[in-house]
Amino acid sequence: MSASAAPSSALLTDRYELTMLDAALRDGTAERRCVFELFGRRLPGARRFGVVAGTGRFLQLLADYRFGEEELRFLRDHRVVDADTLRFLEQYRFTGTINGYREGEAYFPGSPILVVEGTFAEAVVLETLALSVMNHDSAVATAAARMSVAAGGRPLAEMGSRRAQERSAVAAARAAYIAGFAATSNLEAGRQWGVPTMGTAAHAWTLLHDTEEDAFRSQVAALGVGTTLLVDTYDIAAGVETAVRVAGTGLGGVRIDSGDLPTVAAAVREQLDRLGATATKITVTSDLDEFAIAALAASPVDSYGVGTSVVTGSGSPTAGMVYKLVARQDAAGGWVPVAKASTDKASRGGRKAAFRTREGGTATSELIAVSDGFERMATAVDHPEARALQVTLVEAGETDPAALGPDGVARARRHHAEIREELPVKALALSRSEPALPTVFVDVE
Image 1 (cartoon, rainbow, N blue to C red):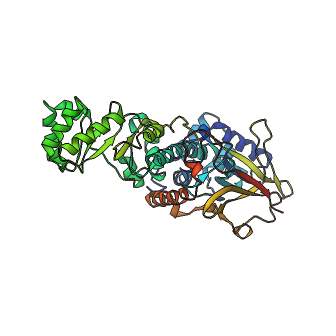
Image 2 (tube, helix red, strand yellow):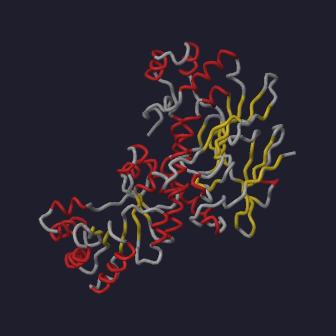
Image 3 (cartoon, rainbow, N blue to C red):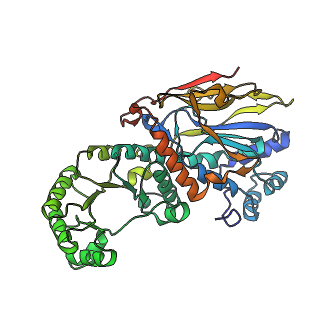
């Protein structure tokens, strides 16, 4: 979808961003160069690592951040800002720079996930847009990564669209795919982001027909013997027997959506093997989360379908990230680090470069090099033992196209699979604990 055809994202924001802009234009501070940083103070749910997701969506919404006639009329009619600010917004274009972690990257408390540099006027108005995207998508991706870890090599399908708002359902499917899920039931996620889609039939299909056998025969006729038949509408054992009788021993799979899943899965596997359907796969659904998936590790399950838990972040529906001003120019043009000092909400001022130290290929810490004076920023040359974590996402207002669209999603998914291999074993545990890597701040001299 082109920027010109897309709806404006300009009012997906909080009013105070525009009232600050209005006041800054009045007092002359609007053009001061500033650095804003998006980061999390802690990991949600006492998890051991987080997963960055939503970057590509945010960058697309940034391209569509335009105040058109309708948006300006609303602001004028509701007296949100004055006439001079309306004229500024009519011409608004982000012309600054955004550096950040690659989508799919792991993050930890204090990780500078996005660093936005521009004038105060053009950067402050992006706070809510960036946070609403990154907080939602990263929460889903973090939950999805934990489920992927718990599943081992068994594939996961995201099927939670009916448990989410219609647009967030698409975003959740995208985030889950980046973090290790294999497919989604959501067709819009497939169309817009290139996520593989899957789906066969629900209980309504069986209930529509006079008998379970009629339903199975019709589904096999339409989709072939490789389809997956839902066998628990009535009696599971009878359903399995009917499924194999209808489709033969080449039946692709059966799905179980109820009961004590470890017990039921074992019984179904035994029955399928006894009937000669030794290659028929077993998929389980039914309100799974990472803990339920882990409990099925020893069961003869071939794949999982996850709904409510993944699209709601499995108990942590937001990543808890914040967007803070960390540096600005003063009246004379010099750079000044700034930081919030509130109890339990303090931030660290200064411009930051992020690295992940490693020993023997295993990550050991999140190293954040802080420049207060801005004369020199840390680079990979300064930390040869570490992997640089930040890349340029937007340069002089121009977005890196590699981060956008289905190709950007595919790259993020590959990157996540690669970086998960460098995490220490303790990062993959599901229990509540401290972050798997310490965040170490060092000052750049």
